[in-house]
Image (cartoon, rainbow, N blue to C red; front, side, top):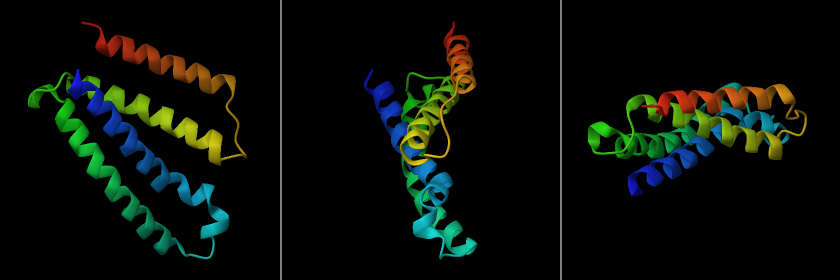
Amino acid sequence: MFKGISTVVLLVISNAFMTLAWYGHIAFKSKLERFGMLAIVLLSWGIALFEYCFQVPANRIGSAQFGGPFSIWELKVIQEVVSLSVFTLFALVFMKSDTLRWNHLAGFLCLILAVYFIFRK
């Protein structure tokens, strides 16, 4: 159980860095607009380094091949659900121009169904 929880916590942290690296320059445009594309790419790479520092251990700890509780398929679906959840929170807090709509919720429901089918034995 500890490995499963550790995996999910590390994936949440990893995805927080990933979301910041991928979308932070959009959310914080007013603070970063004076920088050119190369500077933004390098900044994103720097942030993404931290993503990998959490993502790789999460996958090793959680992988059944290393004694964890999850198959590689389950790890991938968990990562996608965590990624979408972290992104949704980020978008609701920092991206005031976009709103959460019914079709987004319908897509989340499809992802929950994917989790059900992937974890079904």
